[in-house]
Image (tube, rainbow, N blue to C red; front, side, top):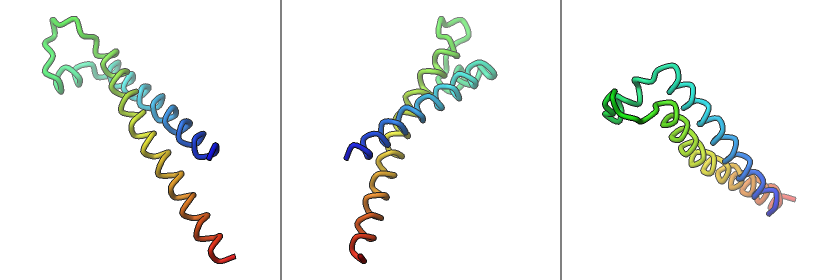
Length: 86
């Protein structure tokens, strides 16, 4: 049980950090992307780098949680199948 919890938390944080970095890079390299997607006028005080970091991090957290839970379910299913044939 502890192992599954650690896998889920680690993948959630890992994907969150990776998503945040991707969003940060996208907001830095192509700031017009977020302005075009969300229809933000250029004179707005919104910072595309902050938007990219925040969106990337939250989307990464969600994806990481699903990936971690999927890994835990697959490992549990595998162990239940192996135990059946012993």
